[in-house]
Length: 425
Image 1 (cartoon, rainbow, N blue to C red):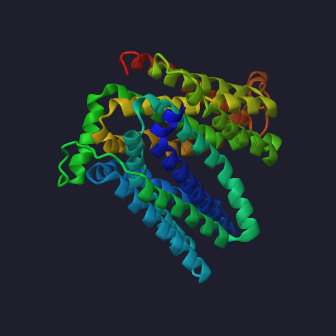
Image 2 (cartoon, rainbow, N blue to C red):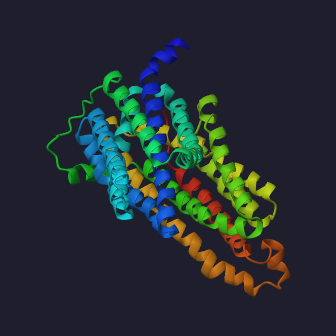
Image 3 (cartoon, rainbow, N blue to C red):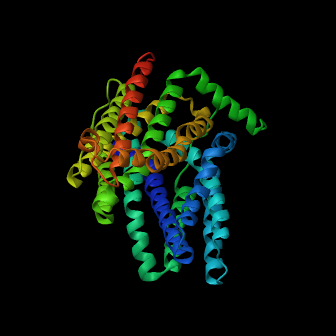
């Protein structure tokens, strides 16, 4: 036990302090969303904040990963964190002077998103450098746990702090958590040097092409990434459909409870990689967990009208996501050479996550323009009303059924393809 703690000392320091800093940033982001909605009353304006943060992550990731591999990982993380913190200070100054506008926030969020785009692959490589291979699965579980806790806790903490103490205190806490993470990384962590032969004078485009070339030459990694891209398309469409299913039938409070079940399931599921032994086939774990999730959850929500069954569906759909993510992480860390991880992880970010905004749009579009009108026409048809109910929300239930079929076919087809590729540790 003592040896394991000693081996993972640096990981525990980075993981705990960076997670704390990420919580502080998430709290500020949510509080700014509340502030903007108070000022504008526009849901579109607040949604644009998220888009401004997310767009650089998708568009610039490939080049950001090349930058990560070009420069020192620790310095990259420190500089990105510092610049992101300075944007928070800028928000505070503008706010205190009564000059803060939504256009300031859009620009600041875009810049912060760009810093995160560069910092994220650098931190992934840093974890690979300080964690022994035999602990990849366990430490990936810790990473999934912190992400789950942040996703659950930040809206509650932000709403409470913003309501009771105002934006000043929220920003102060964000800067305090940044300072803790910055000092810990600067003074207490020494990352091993990477002897990779990479020419630091190589341009970013050349390095980015090397990341893409590696994926082309490593079909297992590329197939897993493309599979997860399809999963994200289905899951993000689900996110757009869920409120249209629950709120018209049971109201906002039930929707809040159903949504919370997914977060609680992910927290519980984050412990699975920590306690389970190494699986014999990590690739099989990836597609079987997603088959279980996408198949059962979507069909359960499509064909039931009970909030209890909806909650059970959410738990089934999300409890194995951390286990899937941990196994994907282990495969990538073991297969991708350390000197290429920054640029390959960045390519992964672009390929795996670009489908999320597409899925959100398609989910909403299909419910509003196709499924709800279709169910309205079939309101007197016993077959369709028996399957999906009647009234507003029945179209969303139909869409859930479509997503269930789509997700199931995706997992079965991808599973057959991934069986062709062998993975050994």
